[in-house]
Image 1 (cartoon, helix red, strand yellow):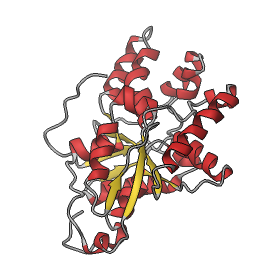
Image 2 (cartoon, one colour):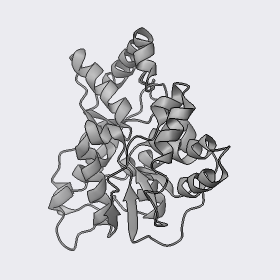
Image 3 (cartoon, rainbow, N blue to C red):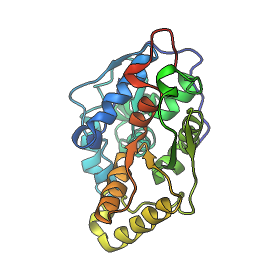
Amino acid sequence: MHDRHYPSTRPDHVYLFATCLVDMFVPQAGLDAVKLLEREGLTVHFPRAQSCCGQPAYSSGNPEQAQAVARAQLDLFGEPWPIVVPSGSCAGMMRHHWPLLFEHDADAQKKAQALAGRVYELSEFLLRVLNVRFDRVTTAAAALPTENVVLHTSCAARREMGTRVHGVELVDALPGVTRIEHVRESECCGFGGTFSLKHPDISGAMVRDKVASACATGCDRLVSADCGCLLNIGHAAAHQQAPLPVEHLATFLWRRTGGDRVSEGESA
């Protein structure tokens, strides 16, 4: 991961790359991501032909299949607008690995490199490009009950995109929210895409450790910006009947800042 330079002016338009997991399993997270962006005055565009980022095929050792998935989407984001992704691992795939898929195709690689430079994970974009302020107490937000939360950042988001710091800063700025760290926070939850299918016993042990560690804090919920991890941890907690509700970061941010209830003239 390298230091990144951010634009000095706010864009008026952005693309949303929703990810297949958001599309199929947690659509509310995608809708809330759109609402967070629109509340900042942006017009959000959603190319309907978008699909998977190709990460499952790529991490399973099938770069040709991942290349085919990426190639089908290289021309979907034709305007020079930022591409916002509500998933650190999917953003990492597009930003760091799409150009590598086309090392023997100069024209496609040029497109992939140009696209990769415009890819931002959602929390990174909110904080570093839009400079959002979530520390201002609105009437709606002030009425919400206090919450203690733990934050989970996927391995790819943490180590490849470096977005843990953005999630931490956004959550820590929320009125009425206390973020608690736990001893296994930096560990993998065991999902790892197809890893959980190929090695279910190891994956199951990892997520049990993660759930137990989070529950030991006495938190009210676990928040994550990565749907694969969120689904894995949430389903494991439900299976264990553990008191650990989970919520996508986009939905959590929207809810904790008052959401639709933010009054005119009040800025979240």
